[in-house]
Image (tube, rainbow, N blue to C red; front, side):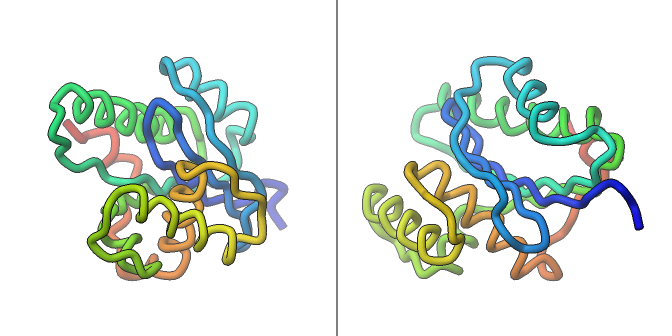
Length: 167
């Protein structure tokens, strides 16, 4: 048996990044981290994982915001997570990009106002993750992870090579 474990790390990228770490289909850690720089992401990686652990990354795909500057910032943060997982984790196993509409529809969220979507996300995460949920970014990350764990055969997985060749 390998001494290294396999994890799924689900990320809701942003200035206040929600994260959820799953092992054997269960949330073993979750929360929110303020991300100011690439150093913050690296610090997260090395405090949460051994570089030899097998890690899959599930991250929310970014969609066009009305504010172009916000969209560019979110894309940069998401790409930084993807790139650092692929380069810093020796046993990086792949990347799932998840569209917000997919995981939200899966948990029963319809086209509703942002506040209602966030409230429903929190309720679903609290009910299904068996962990304390105190922030909507944390809830979104948990739900992204749950979506991937329950639908991984339907979601294309990007290899390390594909992640590193993305432009």
